[in-house]
Image (cartoon, rainbow, N blue to C red; front, side):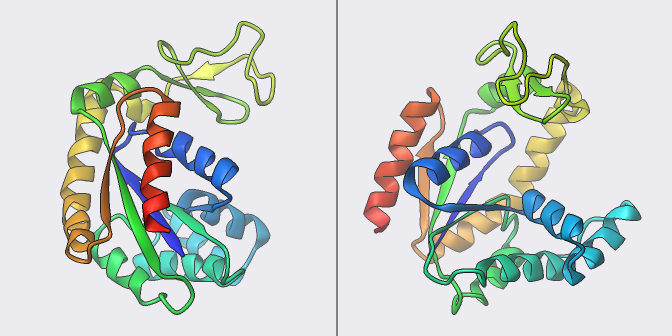
Length: 213
């Protein structure tokens, strides 16, 4: 089965996705990771996607769907956690066409107040070497360096500047609100309060998944 994890930038999808994968045995499938994987492996669909990216273009929905289809075909009995896909009603409808491989069982929406999202995003730091995420206030890197790779350089993403954060949140709301309505109509939507620390949020997610079965 598929569980879709969605939420605005800064809602904690990355962190919670890792916890769900590590503790509950879901295979986490994110569009970014899948794109990088197939481009690196030089698969046919990876080459197609790379052609658009190299031109500075967004990867079309039909190519993204093909990437997801390939990933879903690997093991029909495993539980899949989709992170970053679908993002809009068209992608949600396209995903439903793959229900013979895996059917969407739940859509978990991490909802966080806009002011808190801005605070989270504006303080985010990334390890320059491996990309691990930290936060100036909530999760600063150790004095010894990155816990994952030992790197000592940490950078602030350009799109985490205050003026760009508001635009990103507006775009998310414009694109995703109709998608959430699509899943509400199907009875698959579950709101998860994304405020609180990581363990508190994970406990809420785990309870929601237990109801899903």
